[in-house]
Image 1 (cartoon, one colour):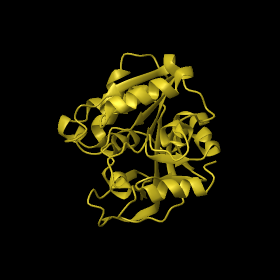
Image 2: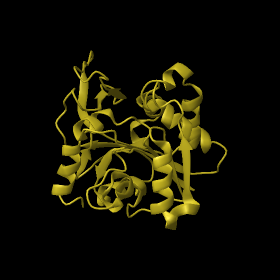
Image 3: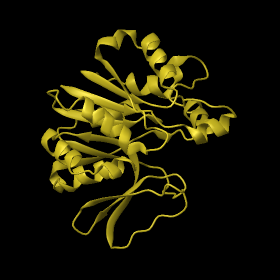
Length: 250
């Protein structure tokens, strides 16, 4: 079984501020639901056996939209509610999704943050890769908006993110630095839940990078692939969404 986990529980504060009213940005569209971020992410060329969508902020609105617009996938969609979306960070949404599938038999999990636009061809490369995957984009690395990872002298992976969107700091020599594509593939179930079990509750209250870091630390360089997205937009504001629209959203 192959599973996609999409987390959309956050309060969309920057997006709502850019619009001028509260909005769940994964549902926002300017021309129909098929132009929403959630539809574009779920309706990729690759078909999963199960789609796990973790919501929180405006959860009932999300549930209604999923029921009404994904009828053809209703038997393959599992909605999960994160009741701690307001006080915890993105890590708890990932935890909630992974806990709901813990007792299922599956081969791999693709995890995607729900405020992204990526091109279908690149996304399919992630899904078809034989092992685990880290993704990156071609965007400039800016502390005010980027999730960053770098490889150290031994090719170990390290993630950086400033929740205050001010500065990033690397305190060791590194071989390369990349703008994260914020989509990952976990192809080793045993190691995935080993990482889950080693993560303390207070760590789940932070970002999802804690779990990601722990998982990829267990892998040798030949056990994962780095895939660069051709087209990638992180939709923090409505202007980012419109940039996607202007680009054709292919």
